Amino acid sequence: MPLSEHEQRILEEIERRLAEEDPRLVESVTRASVASHSMRRVRWGVAGFILGFVLFFFFLVRFWVGVAGFAVMLASALVIYHHLKRMGREQLRAFAERGGHLSVTAALARLTERLRRQRGSGSN
Image (cartoon, rainbow, N blue to C red; front, top):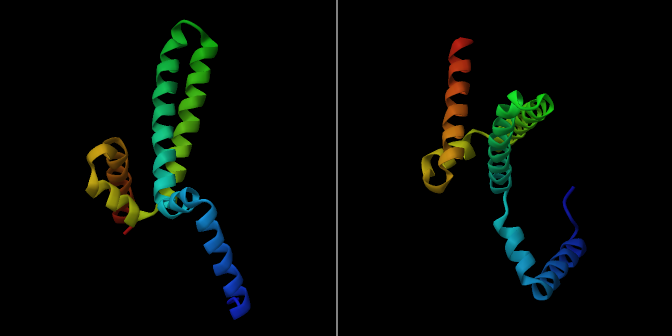
């Protein structure tokens, strides 16, 4: 449902006042996107997975530490999967092409794309 002209003017006035009162907030909101948010979560997921993997190796020392490590690995893998799926193919492809400081996430993006292609060609 489109906004009326009066509602549109009110919204523009609110935006203008917000930009005057807190320009840093406006800047951070305009820079943020679904892709940047998801990539940040993927990075945290990778770090969590690595931490879980390290904890899992302590399985020989303490059983419960190993189980906790496995749980952290599983939860991190689910976070990574959820956010890579949320980003979509085009955004994953763009991150994979850029590479650079996103080398781990770019590798994950390429792996995800490769698995999707294989799954798609296997069903034909």
